[in-house]
Length: 98
Image (cartoon, rainbow, N blue to C red; front, side, top):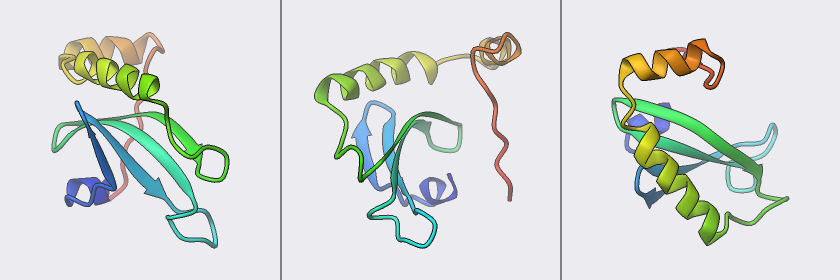
């Protein structure tokens, strides 16, 4: 998320959804992995989907619409709602190093 927070977003799909490239070990980012993240800068980021570029070229229009709908709801969660989702195991929290 460091790159995204620096404004280095690989693809902004709109509606709170971004696509970021991740490098494969020993390779660059262009042939590596794609991650879809529900994102609001300086506030929250939710990893929702990842795929290898070699296995899937992109997501479908229907999938993109579904991710945007999810972003609309998830990015509006209050801290209390998010804490409850984490506590009951529906969401997992990942702390960022650095």
